[in-house]
Image 1: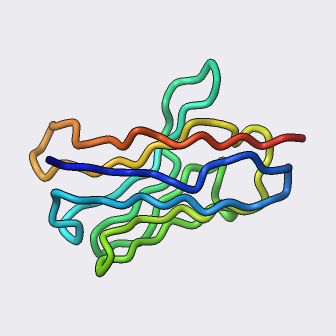
Image 2: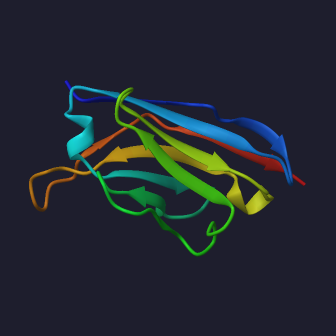
Image 3: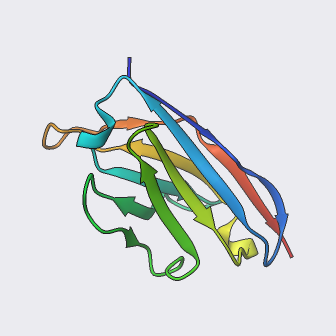
Length: 118
């Protein structure tokens, strides 16, 4: 019943910006930590950014200062604003909701493709 639907991916030139959105349902959104992960070609999945229900954001060093994670608890949406994109940011970006049950996987969205051309 938990659903996460990402949107906002696309093709952008290096130096450009995109804003990803993740619309959630089936959860008490404000209770959960929300994450953005990505998997680039030939790479393992990595955590890009994370935001707690009322906490400060956490960023991977590779995106620190360029990406901003935010959430709208009234709309049940988490965003990822991506600025100064470079080709190394090319990946499928996934929205993830942390489980409230310790050790559980949580739920994943289907992913949205971000391609950055040089």
